[in-house]
Image 1: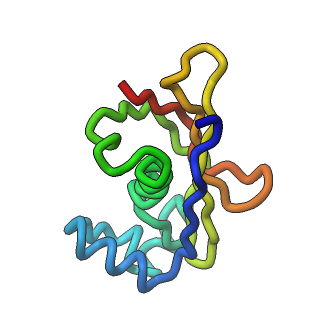
Image 2: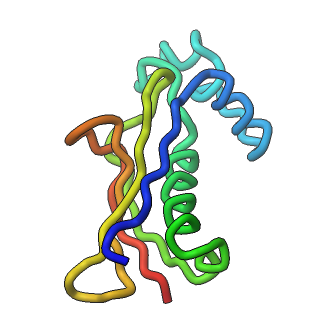
Length: 121
């Protein structure tokens, strides 16, 4: 497979709240608009792992859920994710290694939020 199937998420305050419940991560940067506005982030941001989960969804769509157990992610966050963003995750196989994919989460064309690589061992 050359391309990972894309996964999409519309980030809403409700989705962030549900994700906080799921992960038990109640950091006020994710949930408290007044606190987040006074922070260096300048407003509420989504949990970084929400973006990672989109990549994992793409892998599961392309290779099945069992592939997640052997996935090795190496990523970096480029830009915060905010309420109202529509994220799209995907990836493409690298030329150097047929088991390695360059992965990304974007908020639009050329709007990278997360970049990295996944190797499926």
